Image 1 (cartoon, rainbow, N blue to C red):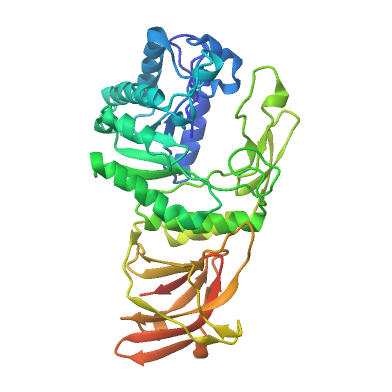
Image 2: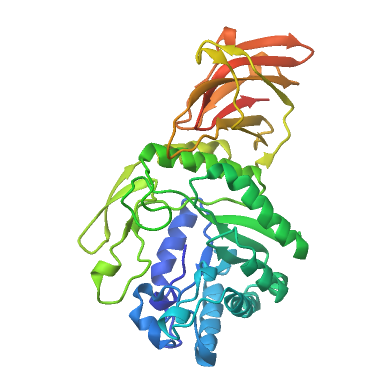
Length: 421
């Protein structure tokens, strides 16, 4: 959740957290653990922030504003001490802090931004720790993980000494590249401090093509949204992130470039939600929500991967058998196969064919040989809806020596999970 400095401090030095208390306490009451992004400006301290809807990307400029920010951060950390354990510093700062465009009209300067953000983050982290020494800090909330310059420059400036995690956002239809992108970021961070963890803080897709925000205009459908949700979150967990996040719970206005007083500039609807929403004329959700296929997929994934789930090296071998289903011999070079140890000690081998979601669908078969397993312990779970299947006799064979052959299992462009002991 985001903190909303503008909404909390409407009079200098007076903080009203009641609106945010209702959100935080509601989440905690439902057994969820909220984490808080400290972000966005306040026209009490920065004049140009008054023109920007929500003061988005309007950092505190000048000593007076920076002091106001530090005081606000301390008040927030003190107020939520014991309820919020993780704070994220700002949102997507490398996209360009608003003052470069709205105030100075200067050319975009990534290096200058990174150095300024590092100093800002160090001050913010110190403010949090001053009132809650046990709090954890996440930095960056990167919009783009492919450009290392921003992260490298900020870490060179000493920011890594003041954060526990680096958070990143990853919106992409090319999800088969995701593992390499995360590995590259991990390698860069390891140069400075391998103990800094990674958090995937925001990612997802629209469920229709006419939405605003990331990946807008792509040929999205509810089914494609569901596929990307499952494929990306499973990949993130296998890549060892601390946790992975889906954006968002419900459809909403994006308000990316909103101007105060001009409704047309901020009624830019995004359809990222796993719940579809209806809106009134002011862009406020009416409270009528419709679950999308992605809702049930997320529900299934959260159930299967609840508790302490770890990446696991499950001994398997690929088989390439003749398949009546596809009238050919199996050959799936794009298959992704990831192993996990679940909370109860059992294991799951999650697999799918990583064909491009926007332009293709896929239905084929795949075969495995699993070591150290028994046929009676194996089931197949459809992560789209949680259905669990017992395999037909012609699909499973005890090959002896604790080896089980699985023949012509369904292979889709959406993840399925082989469940085993």
